[in-house]
Length: 270
Length: 369
Image: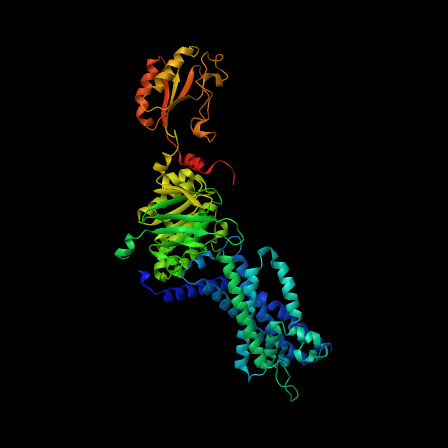
């Protein structure tokens, strides 16, 4: 019987079955998922990339700076939601996660699965922005193609960092607090994350510039700008140093996953 | 399974203690018991007695403060993955994965446990049919009734062929049909060799299903034995109840003689007159001879034993006597003879045995938790 299998192979099987479960569940609501992830960025692109430049309220180059911010935000939101909302349900009154906790794998692997799956959701949501932007912006679509490896790395790291944040939120927040949490956490996250403005331009408001450095979204947006914004009129736009970006996001991933795993344990093991 | 593991008990718990953080008392306070392979073992106790915590330790969701627990010889603390491979849990309340369809709940559960795709597909259909859920296997569980959800959780538990099944109050909130069905299933599974540990408040359930029962309170096991042995704990728990029609209810001396005759039967420790004619509105005045001593509720109290709820006699002269004796069942003939000799006639005669509920209340008291 299956008893002969090693613990390692049992755990690996259980892990992939859990991934498959999440794929099936998400696949069943893939269209709602895409709508949820893409509605806001679509309108952003339309207003800032199309409407404002047309009526002369924004420069044509603004959208080149904005697009990486929107990719960062979309990736971040999709990944956070991909782990927080399911976790709140899983750990809620009905404890739907029990069956996976009783699968023959270590509890931390259940946590890692959540993070990996949410990372995948974030990357998909972020990647879909590119063809959409291409279609919507037409001639104004400008993304450099010589840093594609960094771009892919940044998408992954952004999604992973967001999944870590989502993990902490999903294990700390009670179901009845969820809408309050979205307001209290997302609004500041959104507006201090250098999504709609480059970090370098904040030099005149020094305190705010420093404040934004505490927001992982800042690093995500700046790293994506580094990977995406083409040289304009011959000079490259200054961004936060890519190594600082990678370091900060990696630290964020490690910190939130460790913290989130601990809070997860506290919820499921007493 | 190898020889050595077959000889080990299915479940072994030694000096188990669990104190939750910020709690001043131990939720489980030095519990020791073992369950043999193939046994149905019942863990009974009032709310907060420590049953669910004890199960929590065995299913790896509660870390014990001290003591040890093992399942089929595998240490719970040392090898939780090995434990999870061998157990299945049916909780009190539904924890079914509501994002999945009914059949998927089973197939994914099996997939989590490394059951091959072919095997799990076949087994899911088979178990769903067996449990009467085959027709609604492509729905989500939202539309399932409590009884169906319970059956589905049992189906899920069986998907990976566990050695030990934990049932936490399995028939709580079920309709009588579902309950009977579940009892049958539990017995059938046990006959196939599955070891079952169940908790319940339903004493009749424990009595009917369990080979052995442990009664817990305040984190400790008070008693641990077969239901039959436990019932012997109640003093005067067994009794013969005999309902008679007196020839002349007003004849106090005749009634005294009958009581003495009954008391004289071998093994009878006490005779009680349960419902005297005076209790009935239609009775012809107070009896001349009052019952011996003030009426006592006895160990039944007001819990609705057959004596307490006996029907009010419709005709005059009907009296029920309760004869307390360990060997109540052997007294029927002699008691009937005594009644007839006294000139009365026997209307009903039955042996009343202590119930597990009486044992439970006797041990844990009547106060609310």
